[in-house]
Image (cartoon, rainbow, N blue to C red; front, side, top):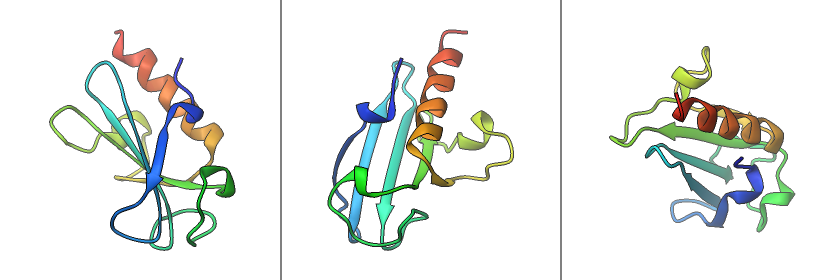
Length: 100
Protein backbone atom coordinates (compact mmCIF):
# COMPACT_ATOMS: atom_id res chain seq x y z
CA UNK A 1 0.00 0.00 0.00
CA UNK A 2 1.11 3.55 -0.75
CA UNK A 3 2.46 5.69 2.06
CA UNK A 4 3.43 9.32 2.57
CA UNK A 5 7.08 8.27 2.31
CA UNK A 6 6.43 7.20 -1.32
CA UNK A 7 5.80 10.80 -2.39
CA UNK A 8 8.81 12.31 -4.15
CA UNK A 9 9.32 15.95 -3.12
CA UNK A 10 11.29 18.72 -4.77
CA UNK A 11 11.51 22.51 -4.54
CA UNK A 12 8.21 24.17 -5.51
CA UNK A 13 8.52 26.18 -8.74
CA UNK A 14 5.91 28.82 -7.85
CA UNK A 15 6.75 29.81 -4.28
CA UNK A 16 9.16 29.13 -1.43
CA UNK A 17 8.31 25.62 -0.38
CA UNK A 18 8.15 22.01 -1.54
CA UNK A 19 5.94 20.02 -3.91
CA UNK A 20 5.44 16.30 -4.34
CA UNK A 21 3.19 14.08 -6.41
CA UNK A 22 2.07 10.49 -6.34
CA UNK A 23 0.55 8.76 -9.37
CA UNK A 24 -1.98 6.01 -8.73
CA UNK A 25 -2.48 3.06 -11.09
CA UNK A 26 -5.97 4.26 -12.08
CA UNK A 27 -4.67 7.63 -13.30
CA UNK A 28 -5.50 9.66 -10.19
CA UNK A 29 -2.73 12.00 -9.05
CA UNK A 30 -2.12 13.36 -5.56
CA UNK A 31 -0.38 16.73 -5.29
CA UNK A 32 1.12 17.64 -1.92
CA UNK A 33 2.63 21.05 -1.16
CA UNK A 34 3.95 22.95 1.84
CA UNK A 35 5.55 26.34 2.27
CA UNK A 36 4.96 30.08 2.53
CA UNK A 37 1.72 30.22 0.50
CA UNK A 38 0.34 26.74 1.17
CA UNK A 39 -2.16 25.55 3.76
CA UNK A 40 0.65 23.89 5.68
CA UNK A 41 2.16 23.79 9.15
CA UNK A 42 4.36 25.78 9.37
CA UNK A 43 3.73 28.31 6.61
CA UNK A 44 7.37 28.92 5.77
CA UNK A 45 10.09 27.74 3.45
CA UNK A 46 11.78 24.58 4.71
CA UNK A 47 13.94 22.20 2.73
CA UNK A 48 12.62 18.75 3.68
CA UNK A 49 9.13 17.24 4.14
CA UNK A 50 10.08 15.94 7.59
CA UNK A 51 10.25 19.57 8.76
CA UNK A 52 6.50 20.08 8.15
CA UNK A 53 3.64 18.83 10.33
CA UNK A 54 0.85 19.65 7.85
CA UNK A 55 0.51 19.75 4.07
CA UNK A 56 -1.94 20.98 1.44
CA UNK A 57 -3.31 18.06 -0.59
CA UNK A 58 -5.24 17.94 -3.86
CA UNK A 59 -6.31 14.78 -5.68
CA UNK A 60 -7.26 14.91 -9.36
CA UNK A 61 -8.60 12.23 -11.69
CA UNK A 62 -7.01 11.31 -15.01
CA UNK A 63 -8.89 14.22 -16.65
CA UNK A 64 -7.44 16.76 -14.18
CA UNK A 65 -10.71 17.25 -12.27
CA UNK A 66 -10.40 17.72 -8.51
CA UNK A 67 -11.83 14.68 -6.74
CA UNK A 68 -10.61 15.24 -3.18
CA UNK A 69 -14.18 15.88 -1.99
CA UNK A 70 -15.41 12.60 -3.49
CA UNK A 71 -12.83 10.74 -1.43
CA UNK A 72 -13.15 12.89 1.71
CA UNK A 73 -16.74 14.18 1.98
CA UNK A 74 -16.80 17.64 3.52
CA UNK A 75 -13.42 18.62 2.09
CA UNK A 76 -13.99 21.18 -0.63
CA UNK A 77 -11.20 21.09 -3.21
CA UNK A 78 -8.07 20.88 -1.10
CA UNK A 79 -7.29 19.12 2.16
CA UNK A 80 -5.54 21.72 4.35
CA UNK A 81 -2.92 21.03 7.01
CA UNK A 82 -3.05 17.25 6.46
CA UNK A 83 -0.60 15.29 8.58
CA UNK A 84 1.64 12.64 7.00
CA UNK A 85 -0.53 10.00 8.72
CA UNK A 86 -3.72 11.48 7.24
CA UNK A 87 -2.09 11.57 3.81
CA UNK A 88 -1.11 7.90 4.11
CA UNK A 89 -4.70 7.03 5.07
CA UNK A 90 -6.00 9.00 2.08
CA UNK A 91 -3.55 7.27 -0.27
CA UNK A 92 -4.62 3.85 1.00
CA UNK A 93 -8.31 4.75 0.65
CA UNK A 94 -7.71 5.76 -2.96
CA UNK A 95 -5.87 2.50 -3.66
CA UNK A 96 -8.63 0.44 -2.03
CA UNK A 97 -11.31 2.17 -4.11
CA UNK A 98 -9.47 1.91 -7.42
CA UNK A 99 -9.90 -1.87 -7.35
CA UNK A 100 -13.71 -1.67 -7.09
